[in-house]
Image (cartoon, rainbow, N blue to C red):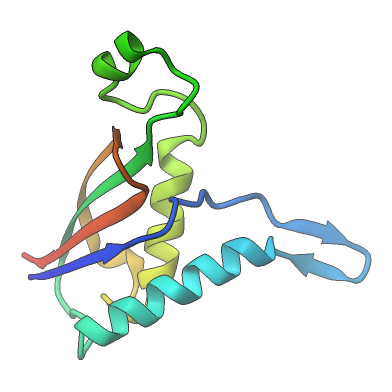
Length: 127
């Protein structure tokens, strides 16, 4: 079992840009995956080889412009970005580091919520 906490605002996987010169990804997306990979590499010494369960919690700061009442009621982050795009970024960033291939992932539990900070908490467990 491996626990990873990334102290960055969660970043969704964008659509790649296709031009006549090639296909490009957003540099922020590439940088986020790189930082996640380095953090995971410092914790995970060898990619897992069997089936994998992943639990991911995405944390977003409560907007300062919200009223005290709205802040008190804030729990689940229901607006953009979509949760599936956030998961794709995590799986892409851990591919080859946390597990050999993301095809090994057989179960995912994901939450997107408000907190006093931004970050991503990831638990990887071999089944």
